[in-house]
Each structure stands twice: as C-alpha cells, then as structure tokens.
Length: 398
Image 1 (cartoon, rainbow, N blue to C red):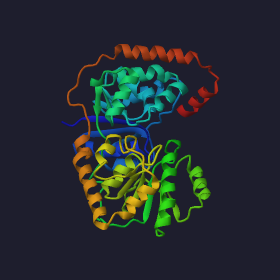
Image 2: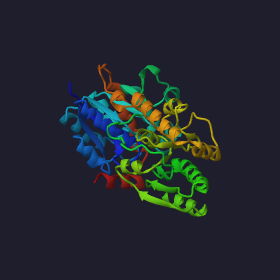
Image 3: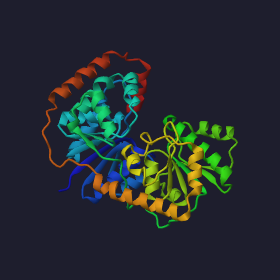
Image 4: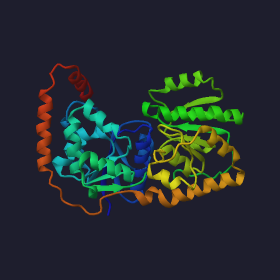
C-alpha cells in the first residue's frame, strides 16, 4: 500500500545527509510510495524532482524560539498531501516540523546521522530552546534512527531514552545509481571529496599530506579536490604552504559519479568512502583525527559499523599506507576492489535498509504540544522586540 511520506532536511546542497536523502527518495519511489520533501532549494533539487518526488522550498533558520509561523505552513502541507509519516533528518528542522507533527498527531522518525556528539552541546549552548526541545523531540519520536550501535548507546544515555525506541540502519547506498563498468589497476588520480568545513579540515589535511608523500614515490600522481565550503581558502593556503604541485579544485557538483569514475584512489571519511567502494575504487580513510588506511576485506565490516569515519579503526602512519599501496600488485588491487564491492552489495544496499513505519502505534502528543506552547511563550518574553535577532527573523519571514 502506497504511503505519503514527508522527508525534511535543511537544504538540497551537496553533503552526506543530502545524498542519503536522495538515495532514500529513489528507494521509496521505487517501492511505490509518494515522497514530498521540505528543504531549502539547492543543487540536488532537479535530480530529486526527476525521481518523481515533490520538493517544497522551505527554509529552516536557526532561531531563538520554536518557529510556529513556519509550523503552521507545514501543518497545511501535511493535511494537503495526506502525509502518514514524517522523517526529520536534521536538527534545524525540529523547531517547526516537530510542533506540526505533534499538534496533528503525525508520527515522525528522528534521524541521528552524525556520530559527533559535541553537536548537541553546541545547539543547546547557542540556542537554549533546544535544551527542552531535544528532549521533547526524541522522547516523542516514533523511532530514533541511528547509523551505528555506539551512536545508539551514547544517544540513549545522553537523553535518557529507552533503547527499544532505536532502529539501527547503517548508512546505505543506491547500487543502481553508483555503478561502474570499468575495473582497472591504475593508482595515479587521487580524489578528495567532501564539504570544505571545519569538522573535515583534519581529514582533508591528512589526505593532502598523504598525497604529498605519495607524489614522491609516484611522480604521475595528481590530486583533485571535489567540493566547496567555508574553509576552501584555508585549504588553498595549506597547499601553498606545503609547496604542493599537480592539484586541481573541481568545485561543487550535484553528481559525483563522473568524478569517481575518473579517479583511482579516493581519500576522505564517511559517505564518500561508501560511494568510492561502490564504484570499485581504492578507498583510503583519512580520519577525523588520525590517519587510518586502505579499506579492504580485513577491516570493511568494522569500518562500516562507524559509517566509514574510521573512528573505530587503528591509526596507521601515512608512510606505511603508501608502502602498502605501492606493494599491491594488479591481482591484489582487483581482489580488494571486487571483495569490497561484494560486501557493500550484500550489506549496504539501501533497498534492503530503508526504514518506514509498518505498524502504527498510537502516541499521545497532547501534553507535549502544551509544553511547546509554554516554552515558546517563555523564550518570546526573554527577547526584546527590537533586538537584532528579531530583526533578522522578520527579514527571513518576509
């Protein structure tokens, strides 16, 4: 039976959550469901609309209070499209999507994509409304979906939530979308993929350091950097500081597949590693803190449990990983690529791992909505009518 499913995320630009939602949308559509997406328009919008999903352009600004203004718009959307369940992928959506769901009694799935727990402290410290907001959000979620067992355990302890509320779904991928017909043993073209942001800087610098040393062993090596973001200038300065040659910035894109196709080695963390493995490339986890190494049959299962962040893998020196890479013969390379792909195919196909509500359990949201209204009045009083943040909010809402 077809369902009308609402997916919510901050924006349709390039990033791990965005590409996950794209794969999620493709899978839901293929399974016969109707998908409506609420997000700020961006580079992925056209591709998502081509799947048959409807995109409604809504912004989710981070503000001092619940956004009941936008919430009323979302209520109308839920009623118009007869939404049966809502999937909330990012925390800025909470302030407006959650009140709408709770008021109308619509079950929602709360996604915890990130394995970085400092994010909750930052939200609460920067926007105090989230202190109670997170508690209401997670306590009243139909299910909380995490990508790892460790994330579930930490999250459950942090918010004091029964572990029965959690569903674990490892980050998965659309195999029909990410596929290649070529399988070679080249090791010249190195690709860094990802958003150029502060949290990824160590990973990017680790990847650059790897390239610099690898270039000394393989003079034909060239580095490509695919992505954009606020730390691009810092990356450019780091490359100049290291006196690096033979590199090229490719900018951002809504389709990484052609770039993956042309690459031989992909460096990074998280979803870009999953995409590289699916495209049968040599994938090297550069780590959020310490350098990790080549993904192969001996570590791929463990690495997948932490979303290929490398957080649960042992540290390796760049020199030792380069030596390992150079010593791989053609037969070894082909074996690594094909075995990695088989693991992805058997375990991380999104068609097998997509989550939707099969049986609805009634949840009483009445008290929760009353708390939201009470909190909203409290935070409204704490801010002056003429404060700078109120002026910003007025501009956003016009």
